[in-house]
Length: 118
Image 1 (cartoon, rainbow, N blue to C red):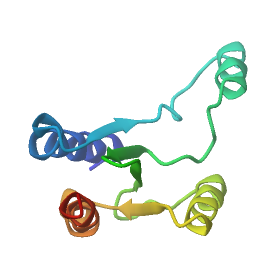
Image 2: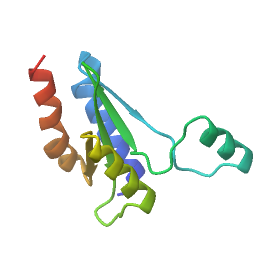
Image 3: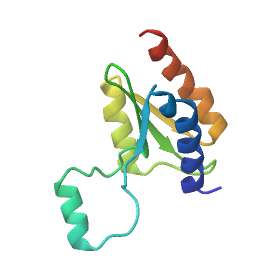
């Protein structure tokens, strides 16, 4: 399975379980893909960060979870590792997931912890 397909599965599942019930919002960051030089410069100058996680989940009370989606054999780029370190040094929630089940096992307990504390 490709990272794109896995990411789609995660987004659909999350929207059905949480977003449609008003318990959170999931969104992607369009870091990948091919762009011409002018568009790439514009995106970078307006805040696009190389290595930022694929998905972000926003929960009530300004809680965020950054999720990097990788296939079973996928590896992080050096920029992704740098972003992970920065976020973890700030005590942010940064999770690498490799399947929908992996997402459920690693991310759902974090979501539930915050939602139960409301």
